[in-house]
Image 1 (cartoon, rainbow, N blue to C red):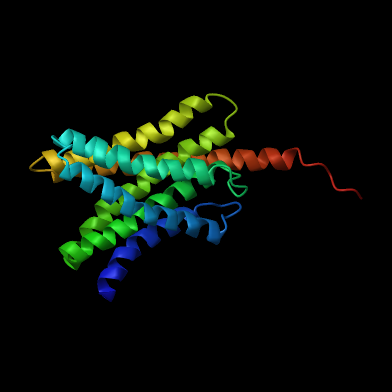
Image 2: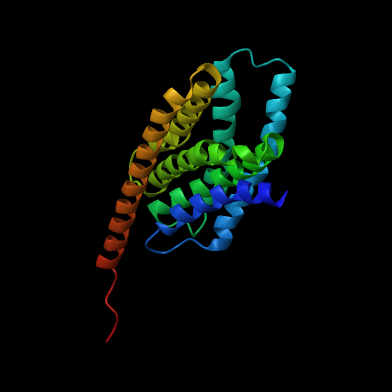
Length: 229
């Protein structure tokens, strides 16, 4: 049991630490990141219940609906809801890169609990595969969602566009990820290039968010009033 818990938790904590430590200016309070992580973790249970009801009532009649609606839209919407309605207004969300920290946090909270449950059901031998695919993909969905949430908060224009993209892009990517798994017999041939693309896109958003954060801090320093002598 301890081995499964360790294998289930370790990938999420490693990825969260990686993106957290890339915040080169004011790091987010650990307590706030932990609360966001736990909020994502608690999402697993209501989402699993909704998915179970949809399957029981035979509301899922195709792989496309299963991938894009019951997985992609349902999971990303709840993560987006927490990020936008509980974290967005918080005083600690004061830099563009912070959106990525909190987006990754809520996503990895969800992915970590889901990972533990799957490892209990399937066995610890699946730990490496799940770390490389579901856990890391959730982290990257969180990166992309958080990037656009940061654009919503710190952009002077086009906020409506960034808000739509903050949900639509992760939903589309998540749905595509699940659709590959559900429909293609030789899914690794499609999943490997998709994951390479996902990492490229996620790291590109990280780089852009860091540049925006650097500019914001430079501007704040430039216009800071001089101290009285």
